[in-house]
Image 1 (cartoon, rainbow, N blue to C red):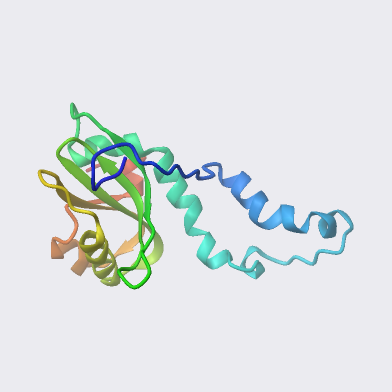
Image 2: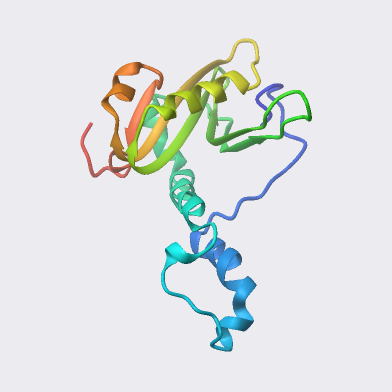
Length: 180
């Protein structure tokens, strides 16, 4: 759904949700001939080009695939959910940067911008990232914008105290492993 108009988006995008298929398409298929011929040298995943930036996608997919489990944590029970999906807005040349939201949950009155992070240490830089996304997000009259962070790793105490995020949700709590 287009958050600026509230109508169905004209452009559809597809996202590979299965993490193995994504890994296969990105790393195995392009080198299939070399792999089958025994000519592909491979030591560890860290040696794969782009691996550091790509390893966050499986975690984002995991959260996106279980997005409806977020509903009670966002206090949206009994609310009509219009859309739950990653969101991308291409930037126009010379006007603004693009916008990429890990997960956008839209109801008739609220748009939740959900940031998904998996790092050993999640620091204060996350506050600037979410503030930039909120600023760039298309505004619509009558719709409030809220923010949530689903994370795996150690969250800086300053982020927890800052109030920048309306909801802070450790992934273990989303899975039901950790009590609220």
